[in-house]
Length: 434
Image (cartoon, rainbow, N blue to C red; front, side, top):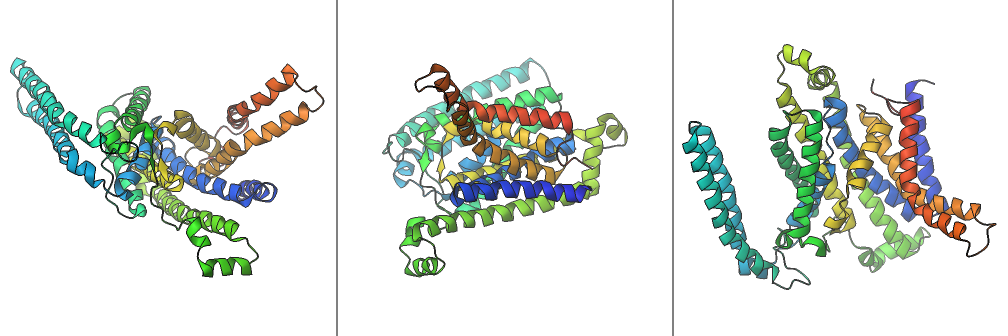
């Protein structure tokens, strides 16, 4: 079997698994798997650019995804006029003062001669700027968060179309990646991993605790959608008539219509990202990145600026994760900072890249779809298997109860088994890099 036939067969297998889900469970479940699988595939491509192209070990994916989710709120939610009147401009002034303090300290460090005078000057600027910043920022935040905290208590957004938030999410993630990369990409790979993980945790902590920005753990709900609500479709006489003509119940038809619409949008973004990634892979830039990945010393000897190129691809890969994060928040219709867990947004994406094939963009897409399908379906399948195994046991048996309750852990067990099997029998992934 040649590579092309094998790859088509692998994608066909994933499609067949999703189709079986549709026939045996529901097409709603199948379409939800497809939509989240498409978003996961986009994240996997972003990580594959960093690791597969350049060998950068980024375990802060969760933070970049969360920034994409924040962009969906700041761009699409309507502004809270009462909060802006109460302290919005004070918050903005405080943030500008904080930024000015940092810029002033950097300017002093660059322009003054090293010595005691420079150190003292920087300390005066940083300490004084910090107290001025807090004096302006804290009262303004307190005023904003007092404005109807059960419903709002935050500044809101710009009220723009939600689709605008997707590229903005990429810009947010790219900006954070640039700041991280400027400080950490000159370090060894293990230090880069620690730095990205630390920054991701800081981003999540900010989202959870800064209510004026994202409502914290109270969550932001009702984020505008690019598609109509199901209830509105069910009230549309033309839609109901068309659904009845096709033999569909209006409720089911509206749900499928919305999910298919999301799938079309996500597929368009995935195809665009995949096309650009493939063009980059086959370009001189892509060959240079792989040369740097394989031997940094030799690449530097040939005159390549390794740190600069690492920064480029780190920013690009993180931006793709930010776009995917904005897409996921759009699909959910809410921002829930408490759900941004490393298990889902870092470990799972890395499993997708490794299983699919590091360095191969099509492998990243395959891994994204396959691993997400398993992540969703393994738990109910495990529960079914446990019920079959324990069917002959007496009701109330401690062993039976324990085995059935253990079905919830089948997800983690399956991920580990799949990863070990692939590393044992296909260490370069299901679709390895050529």
